[in-house]
Amino acid sequence: MDQGTTRSRRTVLVMYTELAPYVLACLNAFVEQAKVDIHLVRWPVNAEAPFDLDFHPAITVYDRSTLNDGQLLALASRISPALVITSGWVDKGYLRVCRSLRSQGVPTVMILDTAWRGTPKQWLSAALGRLWIPRTFSHTWATGQLQAHYASRLGFPEQRVLTGFYAADTETYTRAFPGARQERAAKYPHHFICVARYIPTKGQQVLCDAFAQLCDADQAGDWELQLVGVGEQFDRVRQSASGRHPRIKHLGFVQAGEMPAHLEQAGVAVRPSLYEPWGVVVQEHACIGLPLLLSDAVGSAERFLVDNGDRHRAGDVADLKRSLRTMIDRSDEELLLLGDRSAALGAAWTPQHWALQASELLEATA
Image 1 (cartoon, one colour):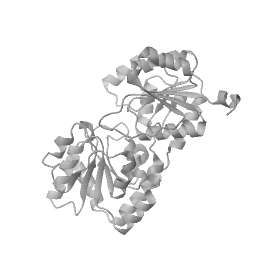
Image 2 (cartoon, one colour; image 1 turned 30 degrees about the vertical axis):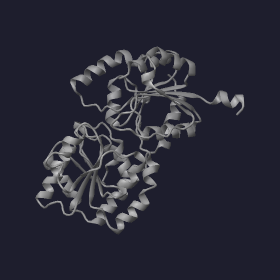
Image 3 (cartoon, helix red, strand yellow; image 1 turned 90 degrees about the horizontal axis):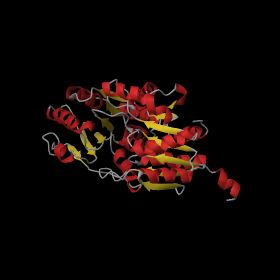
Image 4 (cartoon, one colour; image 1 turned 135 degrees about the horizontal axis):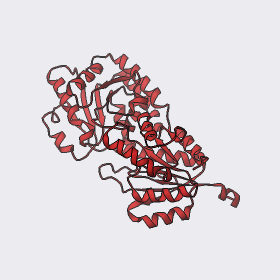
């Protein structure tokens, strides 16, 4: 590589919280398409989601816990990034770096995945944010429309608000879809699947209660329920009266690379969250052709639940039972068609689309 080529390869600084495989898939695509070098600062791996991550050679990784704020500023000065992408405003050291680089004319992008709900706390954050955000961030990259509305409340002009920050590692799931569909066409698996950390907001207890009640009332046909994940409430939910039901299985943590094999054997994906600003897993399940049952708290329904499943009121056991029944009562042929619709919706936003949007930010003015 000659010196001219070396000088033309720009550097991007990404300061993130807990990294997930789908975010890395987008960063890897960005490196490939835009020919940039990424310096990635991330928080330590979450013990409840110990994902194996495969970094592109052009991505240099730093553990946030090994860098104090001064060292973080020194890193930013040394690499002289052409673009900065940062997770929200929770890390004050990240904010210091963004303010410094923004003052130098570097585009600084705030990731926003919190949906606008109009709470008193959010109104206060919006009022205070207008005082400091303009000198810290030039743009925001929101996940969906409710997040974009929050960005406007924070004072971002419409032309500096992007949507679609989260994109699943779609290739992993779309590649598995044809084989999964063929197996489902031969014998449709009557298995609901729920993939989520066992924490209070994910609603596993509500789901177990609803499904167990259907089984005990002889209204579940031959369907079963599988739950994937770990977390603080794993033992509590698993050992609850409904969680111990013989037609409910708790499979524990599954690495991302092993997930398609589990989803291929499933028939319908359920996301009963009590609070879920987005939910990338919904897109993953759509890509592999699963009909979707989502609570009305799941933000990603705006993109991925369109005539391919059903919604229920978050935390409402009776309404979740109704929603489960909408799938149980459908024919296998109808479920296949719903899955086809899911697959088309899921494949419509990829890491490559994400990378194109990130490339546009490289040309933005701060």
